Image 1 (cartoon, rainbow, N blue to C red):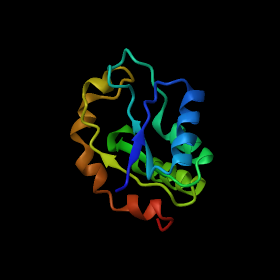
Image 2 (cartoon, one colour):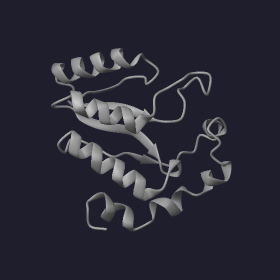
Image 3 (tube, rainbow, N blue to C red):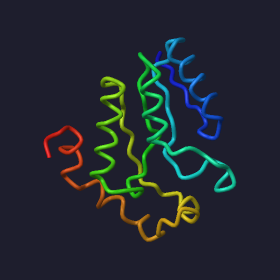
Length: 139
């Protein structure tokens, strides 16, 4: 059985790092962070940016897989997502699992001002054939 953990990105940063290092030391399969603009309590709860915290997590762990739970494809251009993923994968020496989702939670878009019209766009974004080739250095 493989067991992973997810830590809420609204913890104090130092607490997040300690929890991640403890999970790595205890042998958990993976450490998951969500890539959302806000936490579960909607916009009232401050939270860290997902890919930045993934990169810092990758730098302080040695064995666990690093996993974004999940990245909404409408949060940015596919080439930027590919570049972020490759960077984090290099930091954690090949331990990144990339999870991509639709970014469907409409209420999450209001605070940062992401147009709700982009919520209908994820299928076109995922189909962009160059995303995979860019992520693996062939595009």
